[in-house]
Length: 115
Length: 110
Image (cartoon, rainbow over all chains, first blue to last red; front, top):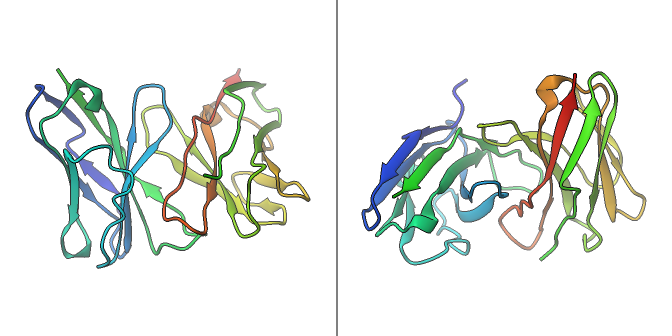
């Protein structure tokens, strides 16, 4: 079946602009995660959604970052007033449930470059 | 925060076994040990996970120390396609997120 998809694959923006990154999880997966990966670094957790519960926003680096998940499916990560340090690959993952043994399936990522 | 420690990089010859170590001395009794890998320009993919007993699947084996403070991912015959960054992650039973470190970059030499 279809995996996790993300769009756009690449985004170049100017400092100060807002950007929206989209994630389509695997159909039927209730849990959705956003991560950020800066060049040469590991993954940094940003936010997590589980079904209709309030998201865990504990990883968001600043109030310029927000995310929503509509209808328990598609998610959008929004970065307002982008800064150069926001340049990174943004990865989305989904899992069937959120148990300690569930596998996370990752999308290919969106590479964001802030000029 | 429970953390893992891995070597930054390792090399292996093609078709030889590879043992990737991970230390997790602060692991609690119910934390699972997960391994993911990230091929170049791709998102991470699941490799294997375990709790106490050694585990085998079609991709790899996971050997867990008796005290659970370390584990080893074993690739039985490395291929060029196994060149990737391998992450060892503890799933905290009190939190909701995975903590990915910087992983081990595996180079496979033909």
